[in-house]
Image (tube, rainbow, N blue to C red; front, side, top):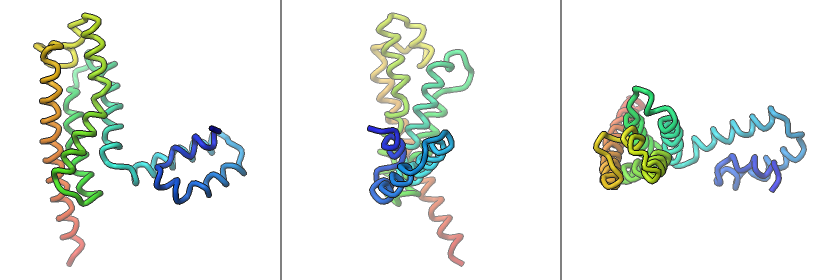
Length: 185
C-alpha cells in the first residue's frame, strides 16, 4: 500500500466510492508535500464529520476525552463522567437531527458511542486491578469500586448513557421541530 492510498483512506468509504479515483489521479500527479498531506487529511476529517455515523464521531471525541482522563484525571479536579454524559446526549441529538430516526435508535447510538469512548478507562481499570494497584482503580471510579463491583458499574453506566442518549434524542427532536417551525412563515 502506497502513501497515496493511505491518504485516500482518510476519506469515508462512500466518498471514496464516488470521488476516490479522481483524487487518486490528482495525488498521482502531485508531489506529496506537507501542505498536500495536511490538505488531504483536513478535508478527509471534514468529510468524515459530514458522512460518518454520529456515534462514531462522538465516540472518537469521547475516546480522546477518556485518554486524557486516564493520563491526567486522577490528579485533576474535573469530573470525567460529565464528558461521558455530554457525549451520550450529543450523540442522541445529532443522530436524530442527522438521520431523522426514532428516539430509541438514537439512544442505541449513544450506547455505542459510550462503549467506544470509555474503552481506555475500562482497559486502565482492568490493567491496574490485575497489577493489584487498588488505589488507581478507586481514582477512576467511586471509592468503593473493586473489580467485583466493576461489571455492575459498567452496566449502570451503559443504562445511564442510554437514558442520556434518549434525552438528547428528545432534545434533537425538539430542535428539529423548532427549526422546521422557523422555516415556515
